[in-house]
Length: 371
Image (cartoon, rainbow, N blue to C red; front, side, top):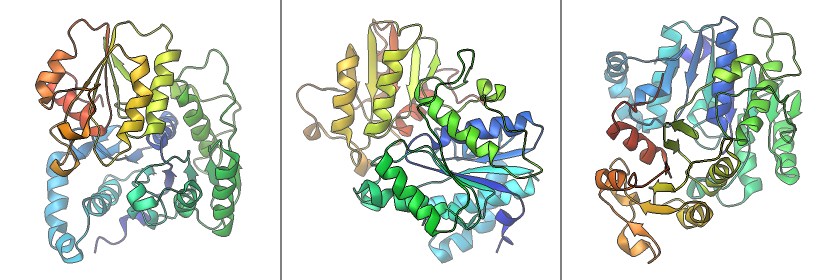
């Protein structure tokens, strides 16, 4: 109905369990630094769905989002389209209407059956694989890898930063089966030069930056830049909200699965300068996630922990008192918990989901996502 707007501009398609949003941010920032008009579609959002669709860092306006929604409403209802399917259509239409030179598109969930997989991109990438959305993707990591590699396209470069040999082999096998070429496996154990700066904090961001660098090196003309061994200087200015984001004594991270929580703990333990103690953590996790494993990972490194329920979490996915053990300080009143967690803290970590970070941003004065 929209005339296939996704065919009106070249794209880069990036999936994976964790790290795909950060990798998108690095890629988009370098393309902007080269002077291109760059669209970016990511998910989920923290406060407003407009955050998902940006051009050169500027989100789609609320009026434009409402106009596209009104225009598509009858078709959305007729097709029984999901929120993500509808938003993806709006994103492609808006990026085409704003005449982007190129767009960086993040996979929503999985890959093979994701709404974004209508693309024929210039380059595809899968960052890493971990357990998430088991109700949709299953609990077999090799099976998840095959789903994620479902974004591979014939004669399109496929990049992966998966470190596990067996899982990487599965990604490569599926990408080959789909005709991707060349296939690039990035060694994410490499360490860049000591003077390399990244705009996103944490050692894990080095792996995401290396994948982003490999993606950029596979771009064809006119987007191809001279291949460089070192990471681009523009990576020092990459930004995506809620990824170990430090603001004064606050740290915000959207970690929403055990792998993501391990990354947060590693970032805490390797922070330079060290995190100021006492470290208090406000945590809200949807009950359909592996929250017990997440709490087991986080508890040993924090001095105080309050569990809460962000208001934006759907009712059926909220914790109840019966869910939690006696070790947990549980306050379902989010504003009160947000106030209490600050008392006596040297540092306050807010984590557990996009809902938790977004609701905290909304309630803390001046803490909306930075554009």
